[in-house]
Length: 275
Image (cartoon, rainbow, N blue to C red):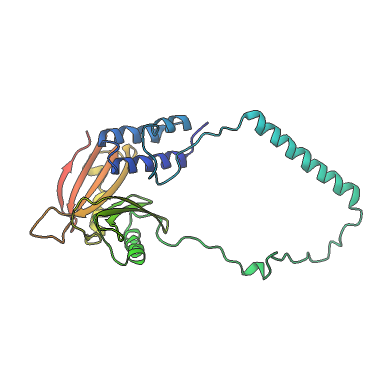
């Protein structure tokens, strides 16, 4: 069965989680992401996930339909016959059509009340995170959910983010959360690494995004060769500045995976060219 863009995107999200959990090395992740973005069938995508533990997968892995073709064809034929029978019945028994000038009767909600008063609830919160508004909106969502923006690590992808912070119920554990389109999933807990927490919002979002925009020039790449870009915020390894953060911009390309390290102000500290 042919794969859709959403199937390829979901597979990449699962591979990103496997990388974050240590199931894949950076090179294995790069190779599988490159294959996933070019996969033509669901079978190819499933082959990239068969050896992974998927309990913490952020989305459901792509699945091929197991319904036999003859069952689908029989179902379609039954529906066609049913519709045809209804049409014939209308023609035989509906000999007194309503006056075309009459207004149609109002449709009421079987549960009572005015159906027009029913509103559709949609998740609030930013969906596209690689913008100043998206990043600021993400931190507003964190404050609303947890009361602050502290944690061990925050990874921000184009349309979702993953947060690691102290487990509120047991300080011996850390809790991993996933944010997407106004919705938080988790926590998924692991033993605490003992690292220090920091204010993960303490960086210049505009400066970081400016470096991301310049990735094609920095790495001398064509935009079509860039597969995936995300950045990770975590405490800086600087005893003289315990509140400082460091930002790593990760770039997955057709030629390998590279990164750019920045300080909280957006100053470039190190560049590792994709190999």
